Length: 158
Image 1 (cartoon, one colour):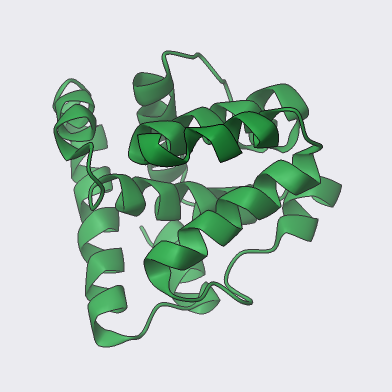
Image 2 (cartoon, helix red, strand yellow; image 1 turned 45 degrees about the horizontal axis):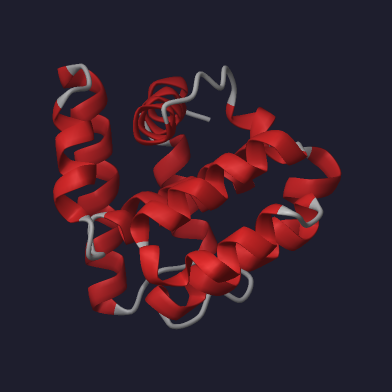
């Protein structure tokens, strides 16, 4: 996995959530999975009642909830992100895909100014990686090309 891209995603989550998670793999535990639910809340404050219930759930249920929510943004995420690999192995690649989809959902939602402000406070190199990710994913969504392979390639390319 491209370390700079992984670090950019991690810095983005930490900046919007006010946390200091040290590794993308750490999002496979219950405490840190709740952070992703908090990010989802920032994307769509109208669904917070559902998110509150999700915070009291297992990691599997929280990840499934996030994927189901994002499936509404991207129409269908079947086979794109594996909640089983996130939960059973803490698979960094699958967690990276999930965070990418959260990032791109964030810049399309109702709370865009909040997310853009947080991105602008990050280092220029981090901003560059986030920009590349966002542009690439939005282009894939627009052309109907979003798939697991394209997300994997994006996380691996130098």
